[in-house]
Amino acid sequence: MLECVPEGKTEHTTGKINPAKTCQPIGAMYASLGIHGCLPHSHGSQGCCAYHRMHLTRHFRDQVLAASSSFTEGASVFGGASNLKTSIKNIFKIYNPDIIAVHTTCLSETIGDDIPNIIKQSEIPEGKIVIHTNTPSYVGSHITGFSNMCKSMVAYLAEAQGETKKEQVNVIPGFVNPGDMREIRRIVTALGVKLVMFPDTSGVLDAPLTSKYQMYPEGGTTIAEIRDSGNSEVTLALGAFASNAAADLLQEKCGVTGIPLKLPIGLKATDDFIMAVKDWFGADIPKEIAIERGQVIDTLIDTHFHYQGKTVAIFGDPDHVIAMTEFVITMGMVPKYVLTGTPGKEFEATVTKMLDEAGITGSRVKAEGDLFELHEWIREEKVDLMIGTTYGKYIARTEDIPLVRFGFPILDRAVHPLMPVVGYRGCLRLIEQISNAFLERRDRDALDEDFELVL
View 1 (cartoon, one colour):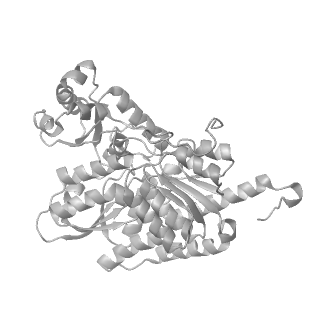
View 2 (cartoon, rainbow, N blue to C red):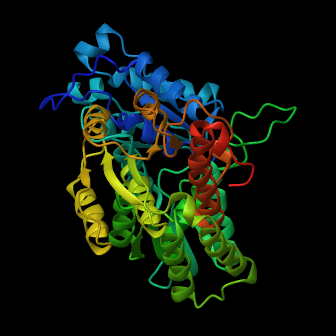
View 3 (tube, rainbow, N blue to C red):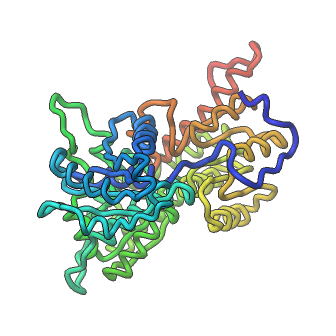
C-alpha cells in the first residue's frame, strides 16, 4: 500500500501525513464516559460526533453513547447557543443522565461560542449537572482533550470540606483501557488504601452482557466521589500529558498534594507507582504483589535471549510511548525511533534523557511527528520490531517488520481493552507479546533444516 512513498528524505513542513494522533474531542468524550451516569455531548455537527463515537466503538468494541448540538448552516453563521440550550433541555427530558459533559469542536470554537454563559442560561433540572471543556480539534490531540476534560471535572466538581484530609488517594489513570483501570484499582486496593479514581471507564466500556439494557452501566466514577477527591491526602497523576493538569488544579483548588508519575507500564514505572502509595500511606506490600513482581523478574531472565539487543520503533500517545521506552530499555532492547503525534517538547527531553542514561546513541526522538516521517526513518535504517497502534500495520507490511499492537487505537485485534498492560500482570503480557513476535518471525523465516520444535 505504501509502495508510492518516495525514496529518500522528503521534507514536509506543513500538514501531517498519516498522523500519529487524532483530535481533542475523542479524548474528552472518552474521559466523560468515565463518570457514572454521564452523557457526553459534542457541541458541533452530527458528523463530528458520529466520527468520535465510531472511533471509540471500533477500539473498545462496545457501544459509545453521545449527543450532539447538530449544527446546520444557521448555527454556523449565527452561533450554536440556541442548539446547545435545546440539546440540554431535550437530553435531560429524554435520556435523564445525572450529568452532561459538553466538549466543543472546531466549528463551535471558530464561531467563538461562550459555553459557560450558554450553560448558565440553559434549563437544568434540580440535582442535575452540566460541565464543559474546550477542545478545538486543530490544536493538541486526543490526549490533550482527555486532559482538558479531567481538568474540567476538578474545576466543576471537586470540593474541599476543610483543611483536614481523608486517608485516601486520588488516582488520575491517564488515557488507558478499562482493563488497565481495573488493574490499577486492584493494586491500590491490595495495598489497603482507599481510592478515588477518575475518570474510570471500567464497568462502562467493558460492562458484561446481560439480558437487560442499561443506558448508564454500573461503572464509572460517581459525582460524589469526584467531589470528595478534594478531601484526599494525595493525587497520583499517571502520565504527564493526560493527568498532570487535573492534579495541578486539584492541588491549587483544594490543597491536595499532587505526585506526577509515569503510566505504570513496565517494571520500573510499576515499582514507582506502588512505592508512591507505600511510602505515602505506610502500606505493606502484600504477598500477591511481591509474587507478581518476582514472576516478572523470572520471566525477563527466561526470555531475554529472544529480544536482547534488538532495535525497535515505538510510536503512539506520549505517556504510553515514554513508559514503553523505559521498559524496552529494561529488557535490553534498543529504542531506535521514538515518536508521538501529540505536541510537547517535554516528550523529547524525557525520552532523550532515558536514552542518555542508558548509554544508547544514534536514536531519533520526535514529538508532533507523523508516521510518514517514521516510515522514512525506517527506510533509511530498518528496525527489528515496531510497537504502536494499528496505523503502523501498513509500514510493518511494506517493510516486513513484526508489529506489536500497543496503545490507542487498536482497530484490528480483539479483547485488548480488557487485558491490562499496566502493573506486573501487564509486564508479563508485554513480555509475552514481544517475545512471541520475534519467535513467530524466526519460525516464518527458518529454512527447513533450521525449523526447530523448541525455541
